[in-house]
Length: 115
Image 1 (cartoon, rainbow, N blue to C red):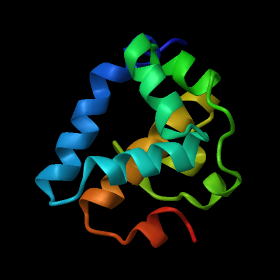
Image 2: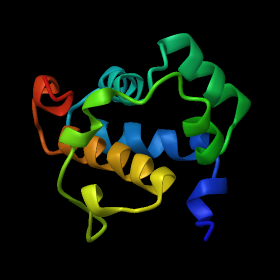
Image 3: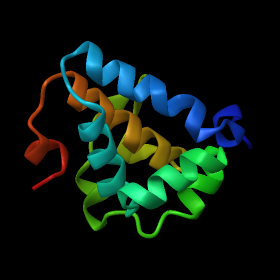
Image 4: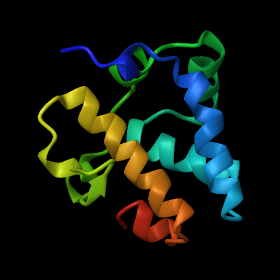
């Protein structure tokens, strides 16, 4: 089953992540750090993906490497436990949502990045 989010441009949602963080006095840099940690992008390759307007499916498929500690990301996003999501792509999207939520809730970067 293809969800609408899979074909949604990552670049169209990215400003919403930044806005959510900034509303809680966090920064775009912190959002970028989280995305790079999760997906293995660096600042330049992340910006390239944003510039190319790739969809979420492409964004995660082209990710250099999903962080080995993603299994440590637990909890509920949109009423669903992230660790129980069966679709691998949807799980990665929800992992990112969860990390951005944690940032907005004021968690330290060390905790968010599972250090």
